[in-house]
Amino acid sequence: MRAYDVIKKKRNGEKLTAEEIEFLIEGYTAGEVPDYQMSAWAMAVFLQGMDSQETAKLTEVMAKSGDMIDLSPIEGIKVDKHSTGGVGDTTSLVLAPLVAACGAPVAKMSGRGLGHTGGTIDKLEAISGFETGLSRDKFIDSVNQQGVAIAGQTGNLAPADKKLYALRDVTATVDSIPLIASSIMSKKIASGADGIVLDVKVGSGAFMKVYEDSVELAQTMVNIGKEVGRNTIAVVSDMDQPLGLAVGNALEIVEAIETLKGEGPTDLTELSLTLGVQMLLLAEVAEDKEKARTMLEEAINNGSALAKLKEMIDNQGGNGEVVNNLDLLPQAENSLEIKVEDAGYVEKIAAERVGVAAMLLGAGRETKESDIDLAVGVELVSKVGVEVEKGDTLAVLYYNDEQNLAEAKEELLGAYQIGSEKPEQSPLIYEIIN
Ligand code: URA
Ligand code: CA
Image (cartoon, protein in one colour):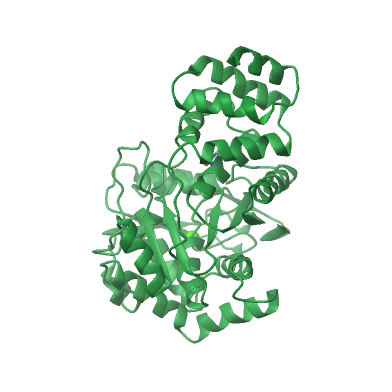
């Protein structure tokens, strides 16, 4: 077999066989197929697409290109949740203890963030002492005993995807639905979950800007799950404005704690409950949607979800007291209120620009090597639909370093669009695909 013929076949819009996909991906991972041939192939896929069998095969081969984590020593059905990314998405921090408190085992491996704010692992490191570098044994024992653990990714997960993603990034072939779907699913499959709940974001702050594309991406990933034997459900949710009110690492820990107390922002609470319902169903700890929802609401109301977070923090070396005393988290030295300049209704909040503002203050990484400041970030005070007067507060910037403050303020003001008519609210949850 020659890479040339596989590229030509896809260029001509033909369907590739399992052997051809295997040959190409394995050859690329081993360094036998060069970047220039792989780039041409990625562009052919971008232009011609792939059907569901080809996409599932690509996913499987990429998943098997490195370590395949075995979670079978953990009792029960392990369900993982993955978001396609957005700004200020605090759902993982809420869901891990919440779902565990309802009896579903949560063995979560998370990454650091490259982008506007840190990833779940960075956020958790805002809790002093919290250890995310767990050994395999400690990780598995923790889930068996406490019902929940969150650890940083270790080992060599889906190296074929890592290499291909870097190549796509510089060859204008990222935004291809079969390539995105196989990239995300290959990593989830290699991390060992039995069931996968996907939160596919749509809107200005998401990968998918257009509703139809987000549904197609969701459907494609659900099909891959079916083809490879992992139950997968996708929720399509709004990312036209940031989720919740907090964008920043310690700020999002505070927001998660408040949400677990039943005092969180409505959108974050509602999305967490919606995703939690699907996780409990896949984990087979609830028979139907209504029962699952009741279980989650009770865990919030009776304090068991918050107690589970404390237990998880204590077990991983952190100070669990933080759930009762938010002053134990890092605090920024200064804050600046951003005021309304013209009265009206908040029509839009460009999520992307809020993310950039948070990053400028130091909440996110510009490059892999950047350090992040766990204390800083943005708190949104007024969200879409709110009527504001001149002088009202739109948002608060928390900062330690003044260097980028003016620029961050400008981004934030630019993110807000104020108009004279009350805007129609876009729904938070568009669709659930299974
Ligand atoms: N996230 C991924 O992991 N892969 C993609 O291709 C796009 C987003
Ligand atoms: Ca948030």
